[in-house]
Image 1 (cartoon, rainbow, N blue to C red):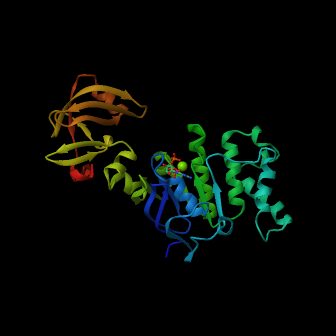
Image 2: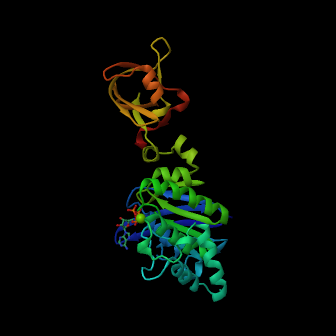
Image 3: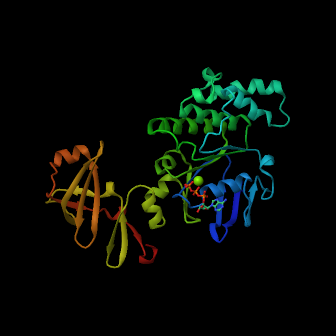
Length: 329
Ligand SMILES: Nc1ncnc2c1ncn2[C@@H]1O[C@H](COP(=O)(O)OP(=O)(O)OP(=O)(O)O)[C@@H](O)[C@H]1O
Ligand SMILES: [Mg+2]
């Protein structure tokens, strides 16, 4: 029995099926990222788990108990949405205390002890007397997180908590959220459409597309063995080509650029080069296969003296090829 069991959840809005028989089991203490394009049903799924929305069919079990029809208030879930939703007229400390005030069986005195504790955990104690407008985006987000974890939730539900932040702050908060989540051991579902966020933070990733779950697996499993072309394309970059009626896929960094005297599978004329920092992307056309991207380390690109229009020799290691039947694409 898993800690959280989402069984066959189906949800329609008007005539549109937004979730189509979604199944997902989450273990205690796990951080699961739900990843998928805009409109695929991620927020709706989270809202159903939270009890803020009801499913048309299916059920949600927590700790073996059916909570499909339990009100949101009774579920003891901590929720953080994309918009921070802090009370603008309350200080950081005030926001936390207000959240704690909603918890039953917690005396005012206990709340006063608990609030500074969580503020230290998210590294905001020194900002406790500021109002939301005096905080940076990252600090507001951490306040919202502190408010959610202050209640010692059984489960933490995060809906794109980092999407409003710039890249630097995001990647810093990624690590911090992961650290706090580990320290508390709180079971967490985090919705994102940022693949890097999912790859770096998740114990397991749920790839969703068009109301269905395409694949569930660890970041490595999904990156190395994407079950469907959609998963392959959505996470990381993937080259697809046809080979005798079969669709093959290979990651750009798995293709090797070798010398002309070594064994190679294809020759390719370099169409353009893209310097990306550590890696350099080589774009070219393979006969009958369309455009291909090969990523090599920028040192190798330098050493090879790569130029546009040069001919290079490529090896596709067979163990790196992923094969899909034509009907899947
Ligand atoms: N209350 C509602 N009434 C009608 N349609 C809705 C409602 N809520 C969501 N939808 C529709 O359901 C679909 C899924 O919405 P949802 O918010 O779950 O997507 P999402 O995966 O979270 O997308 P995003 O990444 O843009 O946040 C969308 O097509 C949306 O328009
Ligand atoms: Mg959403």
